[in-house]
Image (cartoon, rainbow, N blue to C red):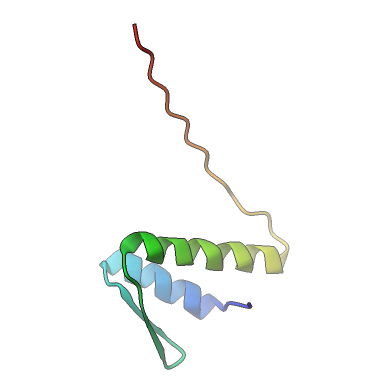
Length: 68
């Protein structure tokens, strides 16, 4: 599926405002949770980056606990 920058911007605005309903191009989508909304944004950004030929920036967080 091809996504648009308007969809990406709508998802970002919804996350910033804490709203689970996103509207773009005359369509409304309501997400069940903020995690689902963030997952959708990640999918859209990944697809846009892949379609434009830009490599996707990834963050890796490493957590460790040492029992003494």
